[in-house]
Image (tube, rainbow, N blue to C red; front, side, top):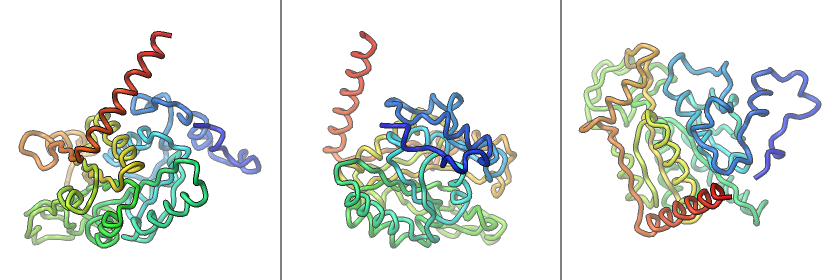
Length: 296
């Protein structure tokens, strides 16, 4: 891995905002064991990002971006929504798709990168909200899984359309009333992890972002699996505190409540037996490498 791949254009360097220059200067590219513990000493998201104060998505962005194994060889594909407003503020290459077609764009991008860089590992990661993933974009999400496209899909589950006023989403919980859904949700939350599993994903995880070490492990697992086996899926609960009537400092408490025993976001993880053996072997190799480095 090389930090030299990510640089600011020399002709534009003097007019780039200081926080963006720091974003590039303190990035952890080239660090083999980069992860959430680098948050604080490095920067994954500039301070003047466009998310609301206290938004759990800002936490999720930092943990996800810090956990990507090879950021300089990764391209994120985003979709219309709160996430698309943040991508210009992160330290990883990304492109914006139309609302719902992010998995189709990612499919073509991944295939093109394989042709352009046949001897290099290039990771493609989709990151979109629940509206783009399970409502408007469900067809293209499923088709990428059916085709066994080798990239990871991450869903930031707000359980409503947070960017446009709080309309009902398929992932909204039953009975929930929002500003743009005054009658309340009439059916249960769509079981997207189960759909992903039954649609050919080799690794599936559902969780909140309240535990950074767990987020890091899941993101790395998902990307490693997608490189070798095929599609992987991660569903992260990132509640829109503005739309559910919470204060700016209550996002963490909301996520902890959702992942408590009996909650709808109790951590669950699915993988095939083949993937389980693969990840165990990778864990053993990482432990052996770290032990050897420590002994030196």
